[in-house]
Amino acid sequence: MKKVLFLVQGEGRGHLTQAISMSQTLRDSGYQVVAVLVGGAVERPIPAFFYDQIQAPVEAFSSPNLVFNTEGKVDFKKTIVHHLPNTIHFGKSLKQINQAIKRYQPDLIVNFYEILGGLFNWLYRPPVPMVCVGHQYLFFHSSFPFPQKGYIDRFLVNFNSRLTALGAKKMLALSFDALSDQPSKQLFVVSPLLRHDIHSLVISQKEYILIYLNHPALYGQILEWHLKYPEVPLHCFWSKSDALPEEKIDETLTLYRLDGAKFLEKLSGCKALVTTAGFESVCEAMYLDKPVMVVPIHYEQACNAADTERVGAGVAADCFDLSVLMDYLPQHQPVGETFRQWCREGEKQWLRHLESVV
Figure 1 (cartoon, one colour):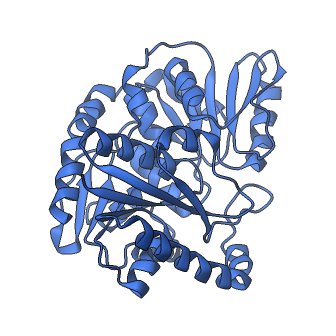
Figure 2: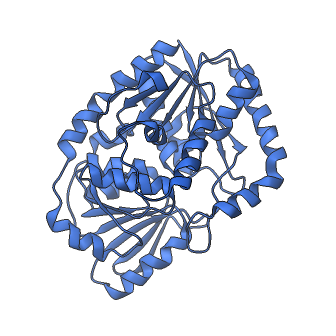
């Protein structure tokens, strides 16, 4: 039985859910996930749903994370200033990763876009191959449709992606649809990693709009729109650290603490999804034939938003003005069946790539 160790960037829920899905596929194929190391801000705990579903020992370590301003937008200057005094902690994290590799003796390291994973691989040169998984690696593809503006941001995002993949044998680029592999770049295009729970959901369409916020400051925009249009029912998941499991604000607005299973349940019955252009959430909506409105809060998500519109999954907006979504809904054409077929091909692809490295 081959042993696999995961390194996961813990910011948001996208990489966490990718790791859950990969662990399910590997276990079904006779692999053993021996440990999962999750990087992120010390003050931001790993969501409970991850511990419940990953079914492997989990260790947290301190890792660079994005810093947001009061409006919920990424502030790159604050991010750099915030992390400069913490470099000593990141050195300890690299040692923690090294100790885990020695303790668990894996045959393969799978890195879900954790920057310290790439730096560890470059500095420590472990005798274990590493494969990197993430939608961000698709930005290296010659056919990727970048936004017209933001060349400096594009450089910074791709530079960060390079750091996560230092010394990696392969970069597996998760994509909404099939694009050609580019082996000269060690770049291989694969279908998204969706949790197995999604296959058993019963799809329905009720009248509520589902919202996912990866930063609590964005809630103010939702509340502002809700007060103008209280007749539209809204169910909103947010990442507030002390959020209640469920909080009913009024008859048509309910807030939820992040909960993977409950989110999928609500997604299967919603009219549409509104989210901050995270790749994973858009994929889940596409699989369930739900139109989306994406609101990017940094350049990487702006790329996701452009890609979302390219494949016909939904519409992009500059802020959480849900009127943009309401105007878009009558013209939306479902893309679910094509996307589901692409996903069904996925597990064989992932396993083939992993086995070639091991």
